[in-house]
Length: 322
Image (tube, rainbow, N blue to C red; front, top):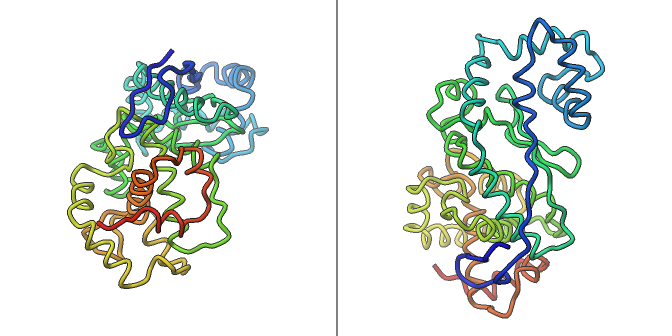
């Protein structure tokens, strides 16, 4: 049994039935493939990982999973590549993720809390893999997979070749569990509004982030958001100015894809507000509105919040005035 401990209001039972997330180590099995026995090793991978191996071959290597002859050539090249740094990267991933007890604990606790809220939700299985810098998170049916080579530390030298500077903040082992739970929530709590204004998108994402922060109870909010501490402090410092800018420009009620992209998509900054503002600022403000809504409406449960589709109602009853 897991004793509930969370920020703010007490949304969870004092005790909850502990859940266990099964983590499958496809990454280790893959890196045990040897050139001298590649055909046999590939057959073994298909036998032991019948659901994931075809997905990995097609999504990561980009070749038909049925083309085992080509796979026998491509797989050793992928594992031993020195041009793109895959060999060194895979070795680092194997070492860093040799102990995954921290990831395991965070996932177990998050899904214990989520299952207490939504008993009908299934606890997913998580498969770890190496991606050649191609993917952080994959869906495999109802299950999830995470690329360990995308979480080797913000200072990992090879990231300079494949990602932008602002993307490195969340490319740390500490971010993997949050990314997995976030992906699960956004898939199982879909956007259902018939309106596609910025407001509806902000409130939807803000609700998911609010729930995510409660599930990832041990993580500070700036980590849950994927911000640095400094980025979070900047947002808090200029919160009133941010809101005034959005209201003055009436951006909340716009549906233009350029506006939505600027406020909601990841990027080095939020252009509609300031080049000093971090990306996804609309999501951050949406989260703050939802927080205010829940503070001013203590009778509303988490389930009721997530089911509430009227973004205008949430905004009005939040009394959000930074």
